Length: 473
Image 1 (cartoon, rainbow, N blue to C red):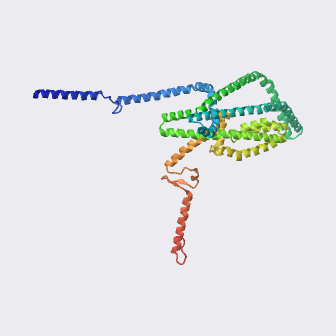
Image 2 (cartoon, rainbow, N blue to C red):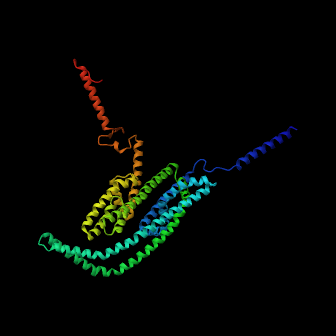
Image 3 (spheres, rainbow, N blue to C red):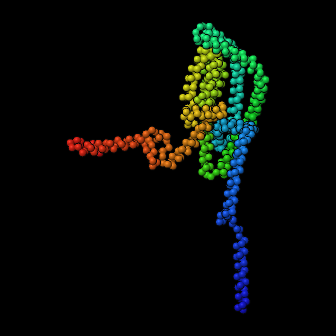
């Protein structure tokens, strides 16, 4: 009996051991629990070196094919031009949509059962209002400006030769004298006449075909631009309807690609850029439109020639900060002076008064300090942007430079704060400094301390002398 019991116990223990062994090996193993092996580490290093070398080779050949890459980028931009137009139109119309949502949506939410239906109806009403405002402005400007511009240009074409002949006659009258100035003017007129005749006989006749082909290409480009604008208007409607969805998707992508700190930094810069660009671009458009209208009324009262043409020139060039008024005033002054020199002088005085009003009263009211740049940096931004990208660079250079200036200022201030130094530029005046231990020292405070020490020394000296009243302690 004892032998049978021992046999049964051994079988039970064997089954338990076998079950435990099967359970252990049936569990899912974990790979890499002790870290990568040496072979894996060497392989990862080799892959890293290979990727670096491959990227260097690709970058080298990309530099060799830089012309082809730029052509490819231009082609892609040309294909996506309607989408770019749509984004720009949506960005400019977004304030109108937001205003409609702000005032209409609360009313609809109180009167409609479904909040989602109220939001859709409010958004549709806002987009419709924005599009109608845009179409109204375009139609009104075309009806008002195109006929007047046509008559102004037509009158200029018919009257300009006579005005030039009158100018030449007056110069010849002046040149009939024997003075040095008269001789200089006579020589200048003769040389100018000879150069004009040479240009008409040689360059103008030989380039007639080129001018006609350029004119044909220009008409085709205008038709293509109008077609792209219409497609962009349709694209902008879809963007305005789904702007929250696009914003959420972009935000999700930023948090997916970057760590939280960098993602929040990118979103902060995006918000700040939108604030700077929106405030500057939309405000500058409104400011320039008002200046154009005021210029039209002023020229009408002063009975100037080419009223609409000059008002359009002044209003459009006023979009360019700082240099815009002068760029528009120079050709306008020449046109008016050819008709009547005294009216040209009156126009110069009028433009100076108008630009003083814009720069000191109207501009600050509309734009405020949207860029935060001083006059020096505004000039640098305009020259740099205009030199690289032309008219668009002159307009967009200021807000772009303002964003870069804000980023640089933020980086510098953060580094100063880490060193426990003041971030305000006013604190770094000529009498302040930072000692070798990294402590900020204000020169004015040091002067105050020296004055206090001198007063204490004087008081001690007075106290040490008998018969004299003691000073301040």
